[in-house]
Length: 473
Ligand SMILES: Cc1ncc(COP(=O)(O)O)c(C=O)c1O
Image (cartoon, rainbow, N blue to C red; front, side, top):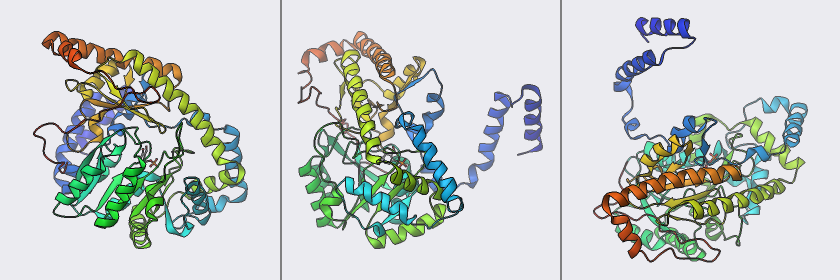
């Protein structure tokens, strides 16, 4: 900061209590110029997560946000929280305020083993590492496996929070298309046969996908595990939502099918307890865990001891599955509200998934609608969603959007969907007026395919003609 900048800020603060936006804009430009040459080259490919970018806008109280992936922490019993924290203060205050082992506290490992058992995975608590959210597990796995230019395989679309991780390690991400049964494993196979180098790992969210809302079928799970074994490729199975099931029967996880040879498994307390405690975990073969441990030492030494003790006290004091059960009741009703609202307010040109669990519905609009532009219009109506482009590293997804149903009341879901439906409808009408194409397309379209349970089959966006293979972002 120069003296010039200092005096600007001083004046701004004295006059208005804060720096004027003009002087802030000027100093920002100067700062950018000053620091531009200092950054590591990898920062050129770093990206902000679509969701993080929007946090400030959607925090405005007048905005109905269907954008976040937030669980409904408002339903967590306050008494339980008070009891848990009081117990830690009384019984383990010094430990809670202290550093802990990098791999996490043994008591936290025991709780994680219980959650894994609920997913029918039986792990030795020694075979895992506690991480600062599942997000850190994605980061650490990428950090220890990926050199710049290495291939990583992900779904198309992929978890929008994984995209910036892969970018920041300069991975060459290949996104494999999905349909209602999850990742197209036949296309994965073709890709593996075609690639001149083995990908470092395959990243997948097979159950209640974020953002697509679909679940990988059992035959595809089996085939994916077979392919991993055949080609000796690691798989990172990311499963934050498996216990949030609203209908249907649980399918075996990839970890269960593989037995833990090639499949690494990532879990989190974020959606079954709280994202605020920032605790996740990774189960992986021992040599991988050793490297991940080294990576974590460099990243943050250890995850919060206080949070781990909170989990321990919570698991001892309550039946944690009861809370998960209560969440599924709430979310099932909200999912249904959103599906009904979509059917009522979205034009016939729109298609969407019908998730059996998790937090998201993926909507695909006609090609001529760009959802990033649409978001600007939607925000003028005080409603937000995540534009689909954030879930791709290869430029696809412009006509899709992710909608979240867990974090809003039924009224807000109905009103939010109505407002988005209105702006979508305006775009469709405008296009129809300008080209006459919409009317002709409607006449040609066979109409949505009804599936069991009343949903419509989704067409996840396909690669556009002339688009090359996924490339480094
Ligand atoms: C698929 C997926 N993976 C990982 C995460 C990261 O979660 P956390 O870091 O809170 O555990 C999320 C969060 O929404 C997610 O949806």
